[in-house]
Image (cartoon, rainbow, N blue to C red):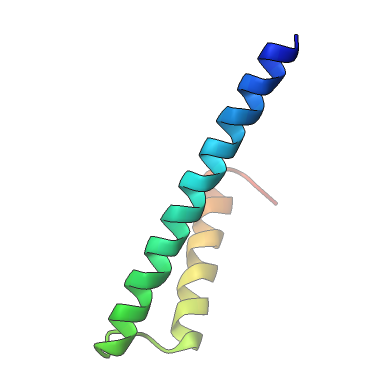
Length: 63
């Protein structure tokens, strides 16, 4: 039982650090895009996210 718990903990920590690295990589990419002038206004980004969320809700019958 303890061995299984330790394996689960190890796997969880591995997934966490993989996620951290993905986020770090995404942030670095976003910073590079912004420095090249490739960014979009915050209002546009919010509108795009709201539209994606609305479509997700419709496809998944979420109220």
